Image (tube, rainbow, N blue to C red; front, side, top):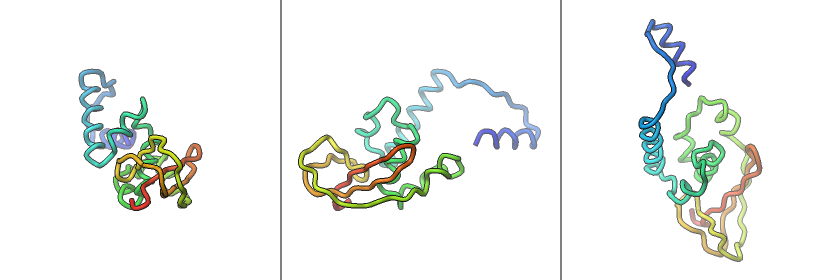
Amino acid sequence: MFDTFRKWLEQEEYNWESTQILNPLQDIIENSFENYALSLGLPEKFLRYTKYPFHFHRLLRWVYADYENRAKLCKTGWNSWKEYGKLEVEISYTYLQESKNYLCLKCGKNIQPGTVKVIKYTSNYPNTIYLHINC
């Protein structure tokens, strides 16, 4: 994205300089993105789940949990999206015997033991998403 923008700036004869974004601006940008992602419905528990919650493949799990509604939120011009944005998925159902702190990535609530919907796909590794049966 930025490479294309740089070319446009040069074509339009703008003066510009690349620089590194440091604090406090870095923190402001990261917090703004976090708040934006939460406003889209990314569960806060999912956000806190990992040190790198905005890693592409972690966010991809959230997208595939409700693909029809969330794919339109993605930056589709990225090479990663071109490679992983339309993966083949397998949908099935299973019975969870016990709660293992699974979080439904569609509604954001905990999943209790019982019948659940399962979405499987492979991106950089095999992924399994558990959803409430009615989600």
